[in-house]
Length: 138
Image (cartoon, rainbow, N blue to C red; front, side, top):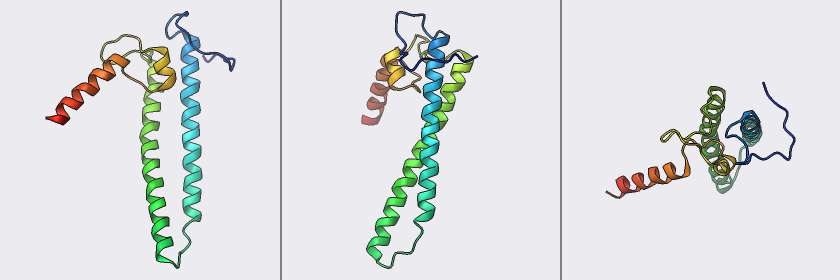
């Protein structure tokens, strides 16, 4: 059951963590983000389809191909982002959204608001990145 939220609502630490209002807020944020990505993807595909014109100049053709490759890489990153958004939406349904996958502790509302697909608390993320650096530097 979704509650219609007023546009000025922002989750605070003064209310119970991941109450229905907060879950609805993050669900709406994630769905809007996903819709924006999908809309941009459709627009990019339409642009790429229209830009199949043959360029007589080899430099123009090379530039066009480079632009196309950059766009396709960006779309691939966004495809992966959509998978993360879908996973976050599933966590909301399951009741595990907002809790660190490593510690089980709540992820700060500030972090979730900035990165609603976060699965680790800031501390756990920093620890994970330190471990990655150590293994990479070896």
